[in-house]
Image (cartoon, rainbow, N blue to C red; front, side, top):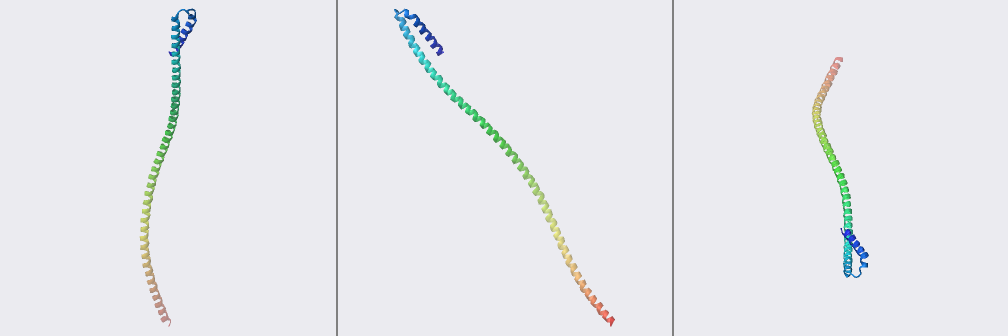
Length: 168
């Protein structure tokens, strides 16, 4: 809008500049020309101010666009990190589940081994009782054998004594 006004004002000034030199007797036109020149200067000043404002707004827009681009990049990086962390969390959850399963299997194996150990201890005690019983029986039988050997010696001695009596 300001640009159109400036162009319009310049066209009027140029038109008047071509028309007015032939009308030098009329002071009113000179005053109008001065007014138009002043208006042109004010319009140019406004135009320059608006250009400066446009440049400032453009710079601010560019700065904000750069900031938005940085934020988009940062968001993308954060999404990648979040996805990585989610994958790590899933991996850890699976490892935790696997470890829990392994612990349950180990506990089951421990229970199984404990039962086997208890059974082996019971069998060992039963075997020890049987060994003790057999050992006592062996001792008893050994004593009987020793007694029988003594009796045999006595019988042999008696037989020898009888044989000697008979031989005599």
